[in-house]
Structures are given as C-alpha cells and as structure tokens.
Length: 437
Ligand SMILES: *[C@@H]1O[C@H](CO)[C@@H](O)[C@H](O)[C@H]1NC(C)=O
Ligand SMILES: *[C@@H]1O[C@H](CO)[C@@H](O)[C@H](O)[C@H]1NC(C)=O
Ligand SMILES: *[C@@H]1O[C@H](CO)[C@@H](O)[C@H](O)[C@H]1NC(C)=O
Ligand SMILES: *[C@@H]1O[C@H](CO)[C@@H](O)[C@H](O)[C@H]1NC(C)=O
Ligand SMILES: *[C@@H]1O[C@H](CO)[C@@H](O)[C@H](O)[C@H]1NC(C)=O
Image (cartoon, rainbow, N blue to C red; front, top):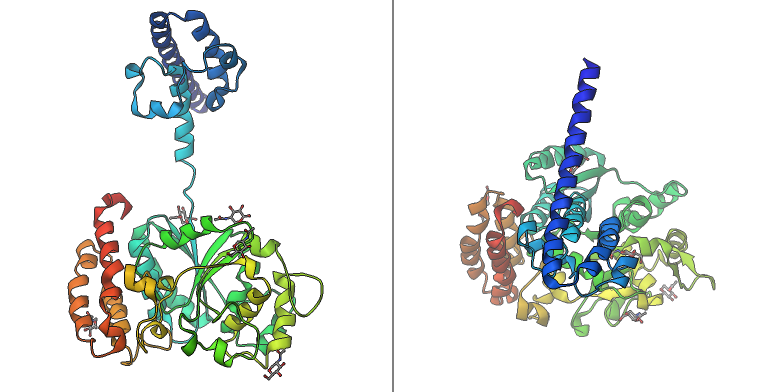
C-alpha cells in the first residue's frame, strides 16, 4: 500500500516537472521566433541561460551583459501578458520565472498591525468598542495584545471569540505583568495598570512595532493610516504622539507640571505609535547619570526621582524621557488624538476642523456621563453597531441626528468634524472589494 502511494507521488512529481519543462520550452520557442523576426538571434540565445538560471536577478548575468540589455524589458510587463501574448520585446523565460517568484511572494504572510491596550476595572465594554472600531475600517490584519486584570480574561475571550468569523484579527490576552527583576518593587511604587504600558517594549520582545491606545479610543479611520506613519519616522525617531494641548493658555503641563515635559505643552500618551525595535536599542540621555541608559534601565531611576512630582503617571514619565531626547519623538497632529480639551472651551484643533477627527479619545469619562454629549453619541453609535454590512452604513444618519441635538455645547457646535472622516471611512469601506471588508 505504502509503496503504491510512493509510486503515485513519484509520478505526480515527474508530471509536474515535465509540465514545467514544457512551459519553459514553449516560452523559449516563442521567444526565438520573436528574436528571429527581430534579426538578432545570437544575442537572444546568449541571454537565455543567464535569465533562466538566475531567475529574478536577470540583468546581472553575463549573458545579459554580452547581449541585449534593452531587448528584455522589465518583468513587470509580464504581469499583464499571458505567455502567448508577449510583446516582442519581453523575454518569455523571464515571465516564467517571474510568475513563480510572484507566487512565492503571495504566499508569504502579509504584514500585521499590532495594537495593544491595557484594561483594568470597568473597562470591558469600552475596550470592546475600541477594538470593534479598529476592525470595522482596517484593511491589513490586526494582532491585538490585550493586557487585562485576571477577572476580565474570561469575558474578553468570550466576546473576542464571537468575532472569530472575521478572520482579520488575532488576539493574545496577558495578565498585568512586569519584567521579573523588580516586579515587586514596581507593583509597590506605582499603580500596576498605569505603568504596564511602559514595559511593552520589554514584554513583547518579538514585536517590531506597536500602536498603544487607551481603552477610551475610537478609530474613525483605518488603523492602516496611523500605522503608515511608522514609515515616515526619520532615523532618530522611535515613537509618535500628539501634543497634550494646542492652546498653551489652557495647557496643563506648562501651567502646573513640577517636572520637565516635551515641547511647549507636553505630549499625550493615549495614542502612542512605537517602533519598539528602536526603543529597545536606543541609549537615552537623562538627568540622573551622565551615561546613557537603555529603556529597561531608565524606568526605575526615573520613577524614584520623580514619583513625588508626577500627576498623570506613565504619561509624565514619557514626557520627561522625551524632554531629554526630543529628536526621538515624531509628533502627529491633534486629529489623531482628539480629546474634549480640543473643544470644551472653543475649538482649538485646526487640523480636525479642516479634515475631521481621525481618532477620538474620550478621556475624563465623557463616553459615560452627560458632560460632552457629542463624544457620547459617537461612542454609543459604534457600541451599538455590529459587523453586518448595512449596519455600519446605517449608523451615520441616526448619529448625525443625535449630534445635532448637542449644538448647545461647545463640542456639539462643531459636530460636523465628528462625522466628516467617519462618513468618508464608511464610504471607502463599501467601495472596497467585499473580500477585504
Ligand atoms: C491567527 O492565528 C492562527 C493560529 O496561530 C493562524 O492560523 C491565523 O492565520 C491567524 N490569523 C490572522 C489573521 O493572522
Ligand atoms: C519636585 O517639585 C518640587 C516643587 O516644585 C521641586 O522643588 C523639585 O525640584 C521637584 N523635583 C524634581 C526631581 O524635579
Ligand atoms: C523599526 O525600526 C527598525 C530598525 O531601524 C527597522 O528595521 C524596522 O523596519 C522599523 N519598523 C517599521 C514598521 O518601520
Ligand atoms: C528627526 O526629526 C526630529 C524632529 O523633527 C528632529 O529633531 C531630528 O533631528 C531628526 N533627525 C534626523 C536624523 O534628521
Ligand atoms: C444603543 O443601545 C442602547 C441599548 O441597547 C439603547 O438604549 C440606545 O438608545 C442605543 N443608542 C443608539 C445611539 O443607538
């Protein structure tokens, strides 16, 4: 029985090989025909072994040098032409190899976007809404890293597994953890949940880049768009955040902080994009020792020095860190991290007024009370919406009506910026081919 199987396998393999051979012969003969017609048979013949043998690296071979660099055009032309319709200036053999090469590219995994969140206390619903907003609009697959208190794990698992039909994401649940060396000390010094995210580069050692968001974030456009900012980092930048304030007169750090902070008004860490490979490699300037320290070494001394002076926990530590290393921070505009501060005393985020809000950040609990009904309306619309196609589209109209009821507040006065980008994202979603939705 086994021998029989082996024979069959062998035959299949032979069949496949002869098919390959037949194809390459066909390609060669087609080419030779074309070459004869072109009147340069020798040059054409000389280029075959080089092109065929080296596969995708054609052009570098001796045959190509000796022969006709201009005759065999770029591969990419092949994409549009089956073998029997090759334009006379493209080498059939190259197309053959290119097809194989393209196939192997295709089966390689697509780049994933990594999204991390830390959820403690009563944050399950809010976190699920954030994750949902990320999934609705995003294009590339997402990998969620969810750090949560133990008692939340079962509920997260149940809710996320109910979305598994989507196939565009994976998730890992982690307990709140610290790197082993001085875990106890950290737990004692600082609220565990608040400082968790500082350790992400050390815990997620295998992950190159990560988008960290607070639980009260809502994505109003694809995660892909903020993810693409990673490619805009210059050689010294390792992380990206938005300013804490646009308007220094109402800024917190510049009026009250008792520690150094980045830039004019500090940065807000609710949406933080990190190239963690670079964070792990960098040696940071600091005001504790004359030597530069790595991420893992700097946190503890920093906390010890400033613990009596910091108010907003980990965000303050990040501000101190980037005060000393300003060349390492990429600052993105306020529409990527839009908070009540940008409108409660009048609108001060100009980019959002022009292009709409890209990422909404309902800090100070505004999704759950009645202080900022415009923020709450967007949250509830997304919380109530499910993944069914028309459901997403049909959230817009009721949301707009809801927002129109908030025009008595400063944020409601400019309610149009809350749905400007959202409307566009929904439209793009339906314009995409269905398999990508
Ligand atoms: C999620 O993980 C499973 C198993 O590790 C894998 O088979 C699947 O392709 C992954 N899905 C995505 C979207 O990455
Ligand atoms: C903490 O704040 C106090 C009062 O403003 C200041 O005197 C002190 O230098 C600060 N400590 C550090 C480490 O900056
Ligand atoms: C992060 O930085 C490393 C080292 O500079 C680089 O190799 C990698 O491509 C960067 N990641 C992204 C997503 O740009
Ligand atoms: C990268 O950009 C930052 C902020 O604009 C700047 O301070 C830094 O000098 C730049 N680095 C390089 C190598 O140009
Ligand atoms: C969302 O659902 C809740 C309860 O299911 C309902 O009370 C509320 O009116 C809905 N809100 C919106 C904006 O659809």
